[in-house]
Amino acid sequence: MHGEATAGPCGPDPARGYVAPVRAHASVLHLDLDAFFAAVEQRDKPSLRGRPVVVGGTGGRGVVATASYEARVYGVRSAMSTREARSRCPHAAYLRGRFEEYRRTSAVVMAILREVSPLVEPLSLDEAFVDLAAATVPLPDLGPATVRALGEDLRARVREATGGVTASVGIASSKFLAKVASELDKPDGLVVVDPGTERDLLRPRHVSVIPGVGPATVERLRRLGVHTVADLEGLGADELVRELGQAHGAGLFRLARADDDRPVVAERDAKSVSVEDTYETDLVDRRLMEGLLTRQAGGVATRLRDHGLSGRTVSIKVRLADFTTLSRSATLPSPTDDPATLARVARGLLADLDTSTGVRLLGVGVSGLADWVQEDLFAAAGADLSGAPGADGTATAAEPPVELPPPRGAPVGWPPGTDVVHDVHGRGWVWGSGRSVVTVRFETADTPPGPVRSFAVDDPALHRVEAVSPAPATVAEHDPSRR
DNA sequence: TCTGGGGTCCTAGGACCC
DNA sequence: TCTGGGGTCCTAGGACCC
Image (cartoon, rainbow, N blue to C red; front, side):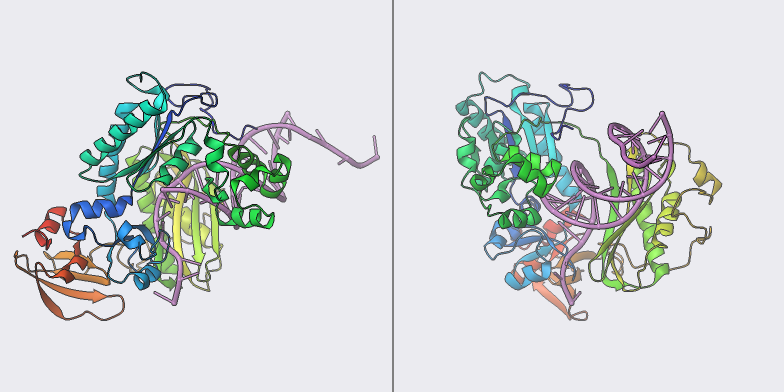
């Protein structure tokens, strides 16, 4: 078993992954956009600039996806519950997020990176590795001064092209060190790790700098008296494997020594597609759950089809009221992208589970993906999935007439033609569109619909009101800082 | 009303095959 | 005469990442 990432079954292949020995030069660049979602919001809505902004779930069970640096001052962090964030920073703007816009801005950044090198490995919308050893225009050398200049140039181009979103960059002789380096001078910083100094950089730091070392591993290592990377170096490979398992243990042994030759790999294929939702109140009605799974299956099918994919293994995820999480899956004889088939299997899998204590989350996923779609005989036949576990016959061809709640984020229930807004504490709508006054009605999670209020456009209270529909242009119109 | 949503990778056990 | 292995596929759960 080779536990390290590989270039794929075909071995070294410049198009998919450049396999280098442990590098003598700092030729791996890691770029991380600073507080990305919040930064995009501040870019597009000048009234938010310099103010705390929190992007994430705004409902009672929401969590923070990104907090602007102004919000971090108050202790707001990613993954914190929004409830907690509100108590720490009540005056922040709480926004649900505009992922279409984040994707668009991310694509601009990734395109810039690909001008530098074809070997760009995005990790998420806001992060990527770039292999400078495979640069399109070969660098005169890969010395620290040269790569630093390239990194600074890249940061400037990203800021320019995104309308002011800043990036932090780390450059080092491996992915691991490049990523560590990009964290060192955040935000808006650049750190080059001189080859030969990697281990000195790591030794004094907490083990949690190592990717893959989360709360559970930190706790296990703590019991072994290991806190820093230097401590970790004291453990033998066999001891680590015994404590943490083969892959994780062997991987940590190497990373503790800055031994990381994982290649930068462009274009990794997706392995699964899923949709899941947490509900504001726990579900107890099985028919409602089936209806929600059916709708989620439709969402999965749409995304499969959008990408020309199909999959064989259908999974559901059920989180009970006490947060225990169950999963069930069934593998079909052939891949499908058919929403009715996915829904039928998903509902059948739910039938096996006891949900009497209430369900806070439901999800549907598909894995075992193929980039082709087989003519779906099962879907054509309508019902028979003989042999497929989890497919049960109780779901009739006619969908149960269950009334579903509106999809997450849908501006349902607002008078037609109004501009729906989100405010920090809930929802409201704006119907005045004049430049000097807007009229806002608030409906919050905690209170019934509030009174109608009119605001002068430059009223500071308006920074709480963020249009999510219909279009960003409308936002500018309501933006109090633009008159 | 503590604890999202999208993923990835790993482990362990059982079935099944040679 | 029990007591093999190796390999693959599948399932459920868990850790982790952004």
